[in-house]
Image (cartoon, rainbow, N blue to C red; front, side, top):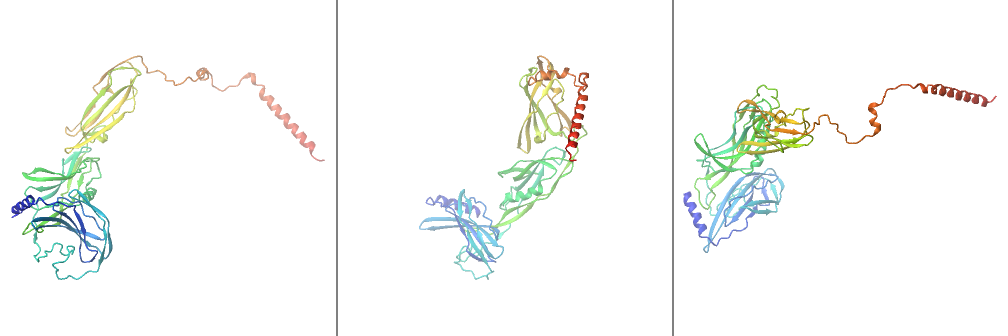
Length: 484
């Protein structure tokens, strides 16, 4: 029966060259309804298929009840016209006057605008006998048949689908990465029609519960959800991966992912489908994932056990020249590449006081997330100034320790470059920016201890005698001026 319907569609399309599709339209329900009635927004395309449409608006004071579809075809004087519609039904939360704000929708890749309106929700109204000519916007039966035919009967088809949370590993070391994926899987033999519903909003709430607090996260940032064929235990599925990230535990606490739910639109289908009528009815179903725990174990004993990076790494290095001169700087790059938490890589620890001066490095980092792995490179670019002539292995100065979880052992990346330094020794060379003058030149040869000079011993008695004479003269003058 369904196959015949498909052939009818093809016949009509081939035989209707005069059809011209028009701009999609938006129609809203009445200005006033009862508290026990529903209200609708209908989007219609003329002489075209309704291939896609964006989300209907949220309306203050109303709750979305779900969508339904309708199609009509008519032939008048040999000219055929068709219309396909999708209707969102809203139910009021309470009585009052509510504003439907202006909104835009994208229908079949075309953007259409609605100016909005005000809707008054009054007291509940009593049901009335069916009027075969009532408006399409009577929300109690938006698809009533004007010719008195009964409403279609729908049935719920058992789905073959599941929401699955998986991890690439069940046990890891502290700092070792494992990839977590949340996917919706639909079996190849599934017959129940479904589609995603408010995925962005739902995913935001899911991740609040899902993300562990004791891990560093590298999010794969999935933007487009596309189906991928997979086989699980010999059964074919289409996998829709909605979230993926690699986690790096920061301590030995187990990483636990709770069960989370994803609400999907699941359609009921008509028991007796027809080409002109409504063949499915929107409903909702929530799918739940199973909880999952990843065990975390401590790294083996090592002096750098609590600071070492964990992963699979290799060294890439380069130097501007291996023939150096004392006092002249040279650029040297120490690059660590591989799979692991690239952001947590620390620079090599370089010994001081040797025949080189090492300046603070410039750091550059690149991270790629692909095929369930986090790969990247972290480069440290140094400027090195040799101070002593001779031959040197840079491996004595540049090395980096990490833990390889695949081999369960520590390893060291060490420089393999040897350099030859020529020129005069600069180990004890004084660096002076300016000439400080002859005064400062005499500091090293001048005695700065405090001592008295015998040639000046007469000064102190003379000063004391002078002070005594002044005091005696002042007293004499004061007494003389007093009245008798």
